[in-house]
Structure formats: structure tokens, C-alpha cells
Image (cartoon, one colour):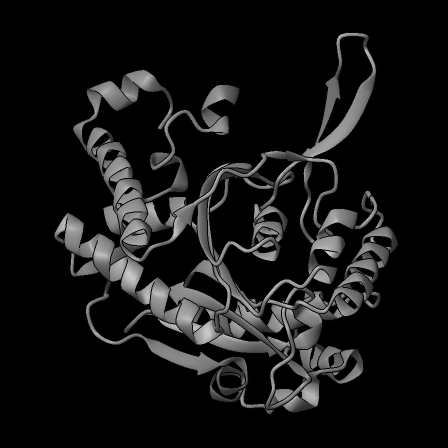
Length: 343
């Protein structure tokens, strides 16, 4: 929406915003009914995450004497929530604003967006899948919806949702065994064989998603919502390895009508391994010419203190609202988005 007047004068946009408020209320009521504790986590942190392909928004804060400290707006409340797990909180959730620089304004992205994250400790990835499916069905029931809509595609949500491994999808849509493409050299050859442009210095993640985004993602979740699980370990620096195959990690993403809605992990709790993985991500950021900062020492300390086995997930609230309202663009579901303020 372009401004507050459009919200006032356009009944459709007015209803979308009212539905947004109802959806967020229904989400809270769902988790309260399951005995989850709602938490309040910081939006500005000294140490941002190390994801090589995300861009935290830098922030400088001054004290009364003019001394400055550098912070980042959170790309996710993940580290803060895991610190709470480490001190004994078992079932927690947070609905908060998150920020990512160099994002498009509109479509399915916005620099400022709303995220819900929840964690179970002890908890498994399967339990988080069950939570996610139950959450959507509960919100749909509150709104009187048995389906959701995206890009004029209607997807029923009341039946049992599908669950497939990443390996199954590569076999189904690319015709290859993903086991053979877990290293960069064969994967690069596959990308070239598919006539896709490839940077000779491209990283594994770049190459993987050239295949995934072109041949797989646009076909996911059209008959039913689909959980895609068991990602290559090298794409999942915060996930524990799968017990059945250590080359893969306990991670899933949820797709509905080709739209990615959520990203979940069976959480890595080994402090030494986590430190090493984050330092590897930090080195990759430096290689890519992106800003770097130290690994959050208090996060590593929290893991060393004995964080329990846990499952957790980040789900985009704005995309959830988009699905339940049939909005055409993420800016239609965000009142006074950043793009409005630039107009």
C-alpha cells in the first residue's frame, strides 16, 4: 500500500490489515494453548549472525558523552532464543521485527519484516513440523479458511501435509542422485550441463541453489503444503548432522505454492563444532568481500553451558498473512512498510 490514506479508502486493503492483526492474535493463542512462553528478545545486538549470504543492517549507538558502540539490527532472534534454552526455558516463541539489508522492496521481500520463531527443548525436527502444520490449521480455523492462496493458486491446508527429502526432490525433478553432488566440482559440472551461467569462483551454496531455484522450488507445494527436509550439511551451519547420514543435516523448509515460508533446524548444540562452523562462515564472508565481525562469544558460552537437544524454526509472518489473505504483494500486508516511507 502506498500510504495511510490508501488503507483508509480501499476496503480490500483495510480488510487485509484487519486479517493480519487477527492472524497474529491467532498465532499467539495457538502457542499459549500449547504452553509455550512468549519471550522478548533484543532487536539490536553487538554480534550479528555469520550467514554468508545475509546482510545485517549496521547501527551505531551513542552514550551521553558521545562515545559510540556498533551494533546490528537482528536478522533473526535465533541466538537470543537459544541462550534462553541454555538457561532452562523449554518451550518458547517470539514474534519480532527483523531486518536484512540489500533486500528488494516488494514481491516477497522487505528490508523490515516480522518473524515468528519457536523452540522445543528437548525437541525434534518432526515435532516442529507437526507444530507448523497444526499452527496453520488452527489459524485457518479461526479465520474460517480451509485453504490459502498465492499467485492465484489455491492450496488446501486441512489434509495431511507432504514431507519429502531434498534427495527425493533432486531425483524427481533433476533426475540425479544428490549423494553424487555434495562436493563443488561435480555440482559445478551439473550446473554447466544444465546450461546455467556459473561464476568459476562460485561457492557450493550458489551452485546448489542455481539448480534448486530453477528446477525444483517453483514446483513445490501446489497440491499440498510440502516440508522439504535433510539438506546437505554444508548448507546448514546451525543444524546437527542427520543420524542416518552425516553428510546431511537436520533442516527443513516449508513450501506452499512455490513460496518458501519457514526454515527449521534440529539444533546443533556442540559448542566446539558450532564455533568452527561459524568461523568457516565468517571466512567465507571475508572471501566474498562482505563485512565481518567476531562470533558471538556469549552464544558459544551458552552452548558450552549445556543447551539441551532442541528443534527450532523461523517462519515469516508477512508471508503467512499473504497466503491467508490472497494479497498480491508483501507490501499489501505491511502497514507503512519501508518502501512506503521512501515514496
